[in-house]
Length: 611
Image (cartoon, rainbow, N blue to C red; front, side, top):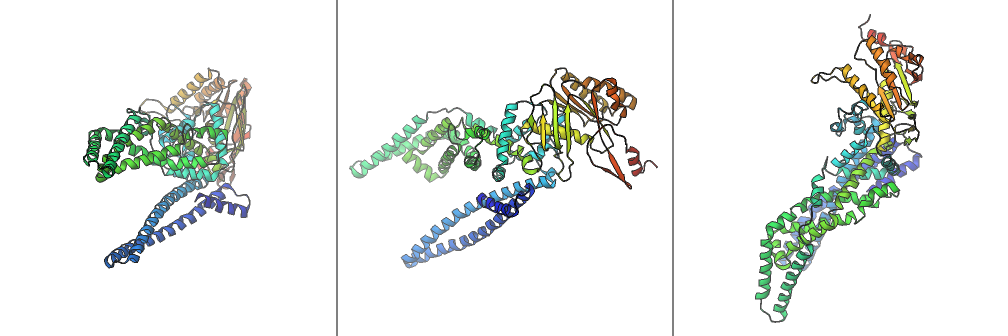
């Protein structure tokens, strides 16, 4: 089915030449719709055929039996076999239909990123936002219209938790970041594989929590598999030997009946304990069965890079995950057969079925139980990588960031854009920043805050190992501290101004450690009067202009643009607007130097407040 989608997509690419990403996913959507329609037609045909074949088989068998017609009996048997084939084919078709529904939902999610309608996606990551981490809200990392919401295609709780940990404003493990970069780059070369893997993940329950399963898998085996298997084998063979002796050697029937009765008695004596031991098996097999197709897709995926080979290694060592999962599924099916009373009696009397089930389950847990949590971790990490690849799949302009090995902080970006807007609506901007302060002025709504958020959110993407929304992006690893979205706390008795003071105090405390940092402050001290604001802002900028920090401050106070005259190493930049009739227009491009215009009075007139 995926092969068919791939063929159709590549045919369209061949006719039109190089396609844009949006065209590619629109082609995938169209061809998936055609396949879904074809599957629906086949489904209707199979239902119709089953409806005809079943009564025809019954009629042929009954009529042939009544009349003693061997031909009709054979026809009836043929129709029974045909009905069984149709049932099996219908089951396979249903699996393909369910997968195609998941596939269409995934492609629709990708297209929503192009259309800008992704903000209605249900998984926002709001539960991961922490008040003690200001960048979570300031840079829109978590919550509605957030970076997490844009990226996330994880279905399991472990995958979502791991993605949340990856999206941090503080660089942690650059080696892991580089490994993820390499893995994401390889996934971007296989967009249809990413769609397939994501669609298979969608088949899992929403927010699937595997912690209970991991605990059960990690439990120690309390019985000896060899002992139970040996007891079952000895008593089973003894019963069959006694049966053969009674049939062929003239022996008494009492001996096999006694052995079978003893087998049944043993099964009943150990029945409560067997039930407790085998109780988790059904749920374990059912949950691992959900991952079976995922593991098989990963095993046959054409992924050869070192980073992904290392990530996928637990699926093949010390044993293949698909083989172990299939074994557990077969064992669960065997255990489920015990629910039939007749089978339970016959199987235990003849084979000591319960003993063999316990032995094989214990053997499976001893061999695969310790490895199974690693398989689930593989998929959780793959969900993170598939999510981090979202920028590369859905943005024409993207690049993997370069981490600079320099003593002083550095940030160089070309055509950086906000992820929250579509590429058609966004405006690219450049940055070439080093240690010191950048004071940005400009009118309201001109793009000052967005510019800071673009730099900060792209740094979060960089630390996670994802491509960024820019043509190029190079930086030295540095912690990002923000004071953008300030809120008061009535219950805690904290005003907006005091809340901002607390944030800047934390910035100063961290700066004393001498570690590289990026400081983003929007409209500094806007919660107080202009005289105190200018005095406080001047001193704050003086303290935060350091050789190991890049400080960006936006303000409407032009007095702060003159701090360079006081010996503080600052640069000035601005955004500007222009007017056409009664309309105010912005180009959202950052420029060197201070702003020379204001628009507050114009906006007041537009609102009818100022005449």
